[in-house]
Length: 358
Ligand code: NAD
Ligand code: K
Ligand code: MN
Image 1 (cartoon, rainbow, N blue to C red):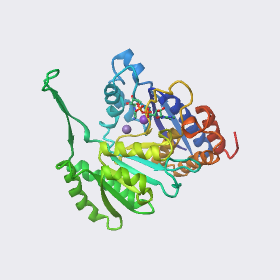
Image 2: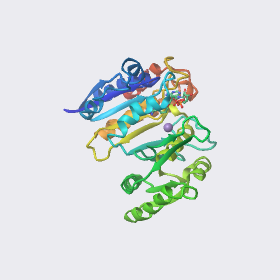
Image 3: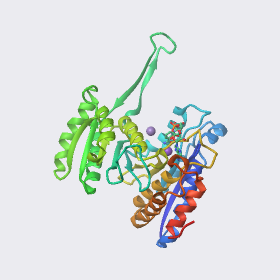
């Protein structure tokens, strides 16, 4: 029997609530399929661990994680510690050394889910945003000078390398090619950012020649926000820098009904290190501990992970179960206009997976 090992890192806030729900569903999907087994091991890293040890995860965490086929991540962030400590100590501390440079964020209106855009249905909004995940604005390069003085300076330097830009653009072109519409929009801000962004445009002119079958166009990131709202159907696959795609994908998540349903994959396409899968949302301080977090983002994430592991049929079966539940609309969490708890939505998806109603 095929066997896959998954390292679950629930992290902080609602991370634990949605990863628990997702792990239940993953085991059910494997049992239903019968052809593979999942071994899920949980690692209690995050802010509680930080208060005990002074670190968000142990020093040998990467050695531990390297042995797994995939990482299933919740969220890093807690009201008691500054975000830059939790983010750099956990999530980025995994993404960066494993060089998970391709962050893939599907955005699709699920059946039955009402987005904020009038007259826009599931056929009109079906995007994949590819975010450069290893360099750019989040490279961690910069500094502070003259701390506390009036001439104090703070700098974050956006670093772009030809290797980094070319590999993410090729990844996005390959992904666009595999989708029915074969369409890719390059997003930059080359009118104002004259160095790195002009570089992105120029590299794109080179690499897109290898993809004559993919239709391409270019947008400035500010104009892109308008197009996403006013003409969503004109977009399909999108590629942008770390910062720009971070912002665009939160907008995309909102346009598809809730931040609580959106998934993301931090991929290492070369597969010489594990890839990491997580719902796009964070720790959701306002609802944590209440049992009302929407687990659908964690389920969609689990489906992406199954596809990556080589179980596409189970990945589709899981999404079909999720979509039956959203289409029916009876058992949804508050962010989608319902009153159900995390556990009730999970039970409903498990029932849909078995072809019965909970
Ligand atoms: P957030 O995603 O945690 O929450 C934003 C809003 O969306 C909140 O109103 C929240 O209740 C709602 N929401 C999010 N997920 C939901 C779900 N599953 N079900 C229902 N509602 C949901 O973003 P934030 O408030 O900006 O950040 C809170 C903390 O999370 C911060 O510490 C931040 O750094 C961290 N964060 C971490 C990640 C990550 O680990 N990848 C991503 C984003 C934010
Ligand atoms: K997350
Ligand atoms: Mn973000």
